[in-house]
Image (cartoon, rainbow, N blue to C red; front, side):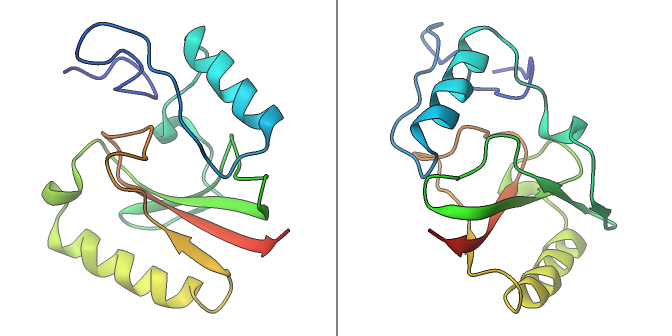
Length: 132
């Protein structure tokens, strides 16, 4: 499947528009996210402005935050399209170092599995702070 925009899987393998399942987003944010998917208004995580750009990863604000449960919702995003299995060893090492650093700042570091993620082609993790 080729990448067209933010959501490689916006159109599933049957050519049907993807519908999001349960998430930690508020109902309003979830509805906005679904609306943007349905209307092809999402953009690539690679196009989101970096708060901090590391060698292999960018720290960004989550445009569709997990605001149903968390006050702060940020992401570490790999700086290219890839699968988790294909990123370089150097990128894995940098991610480990960043996770060790961010564990001191954020309450939760979350990586969704393939059944929960809405972005398959850009490795990323969620950094969550201030549980509601």
